[in-house]
Length: 120
Image 1 (cartoon, helix red, strand yellow):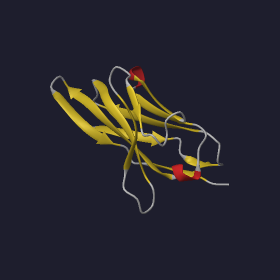
Image 2 (tube, one colour):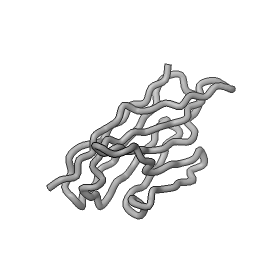
Image 3 (tube, helix red, strand yellow):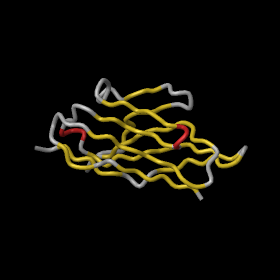
Image 4 (spheres, helix red, strand yellow):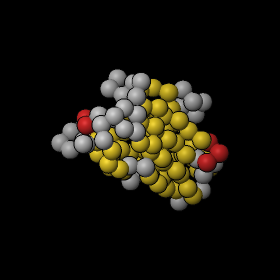
């Protein structure tokens, strides 16, 4: 069985920083493409950032230059460094990771979500 555990959310003032972590555990060969999503109250879930197996990244226009997605393959973990946070970044953040569990078997696994609140 495979699961993702997210951590790092919390309350921060505008202009502050947070680092979200998403760690995979269980029967894992490797983690592949990973994405961070967020969902604010009353809004649809939106993609924030993604990273390929080889470290190629992409970002939503709203977070470019402020957020950085990274990965540590040895730890089966993905991170989202969030700087210069704004109130509109307030949302529940989810990681979504494609995980290889056997030589020809892959699972898409979602984290449980972590709340990020940006407020003074």
